[in-house]
Each structure stands twice: as C-alpha cells, then as structure tokens.
Length: 251
Ligand code: SAH
Image 1: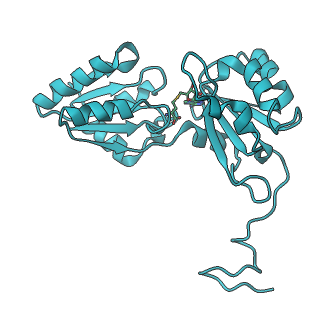
Image 2: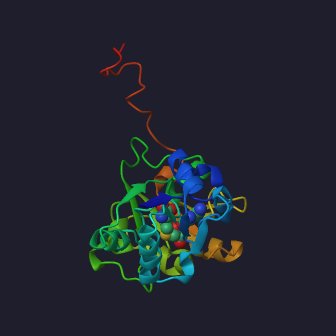
Image 3: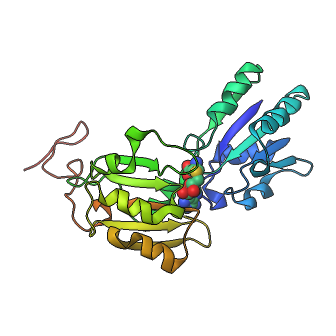
C-alpha cells in the first residue's frame, strides 16, 4: 500500500496527525528532498528505508513502490505542502493503478496557507476579493497560454504565485500589465513556517528590487492583491443585524 502524504509547509508539527502516524509506521519513505523538512524523517522507525526523490525519476520512484508492494510493505510518499498542488502525484497514482497497487492520499497544509498565517492575513476579505488564484510563471515548465499571469491578473483578485521567485522582474511586469497597480500591496514569503522564514512586504512596483535586496530567488511565494492592504468590510456572518441559520439578527 502507498500513502501519498502532505508534509506541510515546513515546520515539522504542521504535518497532519494522520500523516505523522503513517510516517511512524512506514517501512519505506520516499520524500521530496528539495522542500520537505528533513526533521520529519526523525519520526521514521529504525530500519525504515528512506529515499530522496529529488535524485530520482518517476520510473525509479514507481520501481521502489512496486518492489515494496511485492514484500507487502507500507510506503509513504512524502510531498511538500499539499500534494495536490505542483506535487506531480497524478502521474504516480496512474502508474500505481496500472500496477494494481492500492494507495490513498493524505492532504497537507499548503505553503500558501502557511504564508497567509505567517503574514497574519486573510485572502478572502469582504469588499476586497472573494477569490484566490494559485498559479505560477511559465519557466522551463510551460503554462497554458490562456493562464498567463497577465490574463489572471486582469481580475485583480488575491493571487499567490508559486515557483516563480527566480523570475521576479518578469513576474512584476506581467502582474502590472493586469489589473494591479505599482502601489498594489505585495509580499515575498521565503520558507514560510521554517526557522529561516522571511517576510517582505512591498508595493508591487518594488517586488523585483525587494527580491534582489533580500537575496530571495527560490523557495518563496509571491502574494499580491488588496487583501494585503488595510481596507475591507466587516463580515455579514458576524454582523449583529444579519440573520443566519443559527442566529436571529437584531437591528
Ligand atoms: N505542494 C507544495 C508546492 C510545491 S511547488 C505546497 O502545497 O506548498 C514548490 C514551490 O512551492 C516553491 O518553489 C515555492 O514557490 C513554494 N513553497 C513550498 N514551500 C514553501 C514555503 N515553506 N514557503 C514559501 N514557499 C514555499
């Protein structure tokens, strides 16, 4: 059996209880070595076979899973954040289906949640934005043309850009070509929830410069949108005058 487990954004105690339990029991662990906090491997029992997938191909990963299954071993495939976001798990699951190897997926706390927590902010502010766009710049990995940063930025919604900290100049230009202004608040969040976490807030017009000044070019998220600003409306749900299914409103 294979368990795809979200490791969380970095801090080892941000893995789920279920994920930690599976790691403790695992016979084989294949972890995404570039971003999973190695401290989590401390949960593994002595004798657990540990592989770093950063040095492996999909074929090699699948082969380790297949060999483990023949021995009836439990394999944990440990992905950073939540495995459903840039985790490349679909191709692994499809191969496991072809091989008739059972699996389940255990979600994790994504880095975009870790980043919002670190910044003490909320993506979905009433009167500001009710939409969060998670995306990336095209790099060596292409992005469909209809999802270009500029076209997504046309909404002026809350936006989180993964995998793009090495392209801040181009990212800033693409965002400005959409609905955002030079003055729209933005943030660079480096290694959210890790001990070396860094939070840099700036107006969008200074994003690339901030990256240079603070030396941030990888393992970071770019957040942009007016949710990082000061203005919003209070929520209806907790407004004394608003009636909900659980509470009678009083004018
Ligand atoms: N599945 C992961 C994302 C993997 S893609 C998740 O849910 O978070 C890898 C990219 O995620 C990195 O290039 C970076 O943009 C972002 N990332 C992952 N962990 C991060 C962290 N702790 N802080 C900031 N960005 C992070």
